[in-house]
Length: 245
Ligand SMILES: Nc1ncnc2c1ncn2[C@@H]1O[C@H](COP(=O)(O)OP(=O)(O)OP(=O)(O)O)[C@@H](O)[C@H]1O
Ligand SMILES: [Mg+2]
Image (cartoon, rainbow, N blue to C red):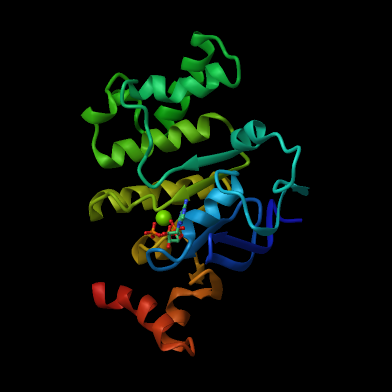
């Protein structure tokens, strides 16, 4: 059984069909990468998984339980599914350390000392311990992204969901984030990452899932999609990587 099983997922905003029958599995220990152009529904898909968006129809099973129905403990769900948002979403008035300890204290009920010990462990794991006392405004984009990841990992989630983790970063910092995701993968952290960054996708996953206008069009290696996919638009999307090199 996959950790996350999405079946026939449909999401409409008024009459706009944003997700049009998505079927997707995330298996424990894997890094699943979903790619697609801006506005194709990537963030909406992720938001359905942790119930920030209510699906119009279809099911999402997490560890075998349907999490789209009534009576789901959304708070517990969000503790099991770590979310790293497109725009970091760190609290500006809190230091890096306090950003990481907040949920440990408020949701896990840890004492300050316990929470700080756990947070420092996660920050050190992501080479962020030296920046613990900085406010988000005093950190670089890559450091913000690592702080957001540390905050997600501190909750020991079953899966970490990443929404465009490199969209706000320059190429050097993007590569750092890619290396970090790779390392977490080797440490057996399950991740679902959506991105339109071909270099990121190519360096963290062998195969990618291509989402286009709310439908999954393909699942294959980037090399295969860029050369052999029957749809010219798909080939063009994935061919950009070669142009960039
Ligand atoms: N709350 C909402 N209300 C109405 N329409 C929405 C809402 N959220 C998203 N949409 C629409 O759904 C479509 C998909 O949006 P989404 O944010 O999922 O795209 P995306 O693939 O993440 O794009 P990007 O790569 O730019 O982040 C867009 O047309 C967007 O305008
Ligand atoms: Mg998005």
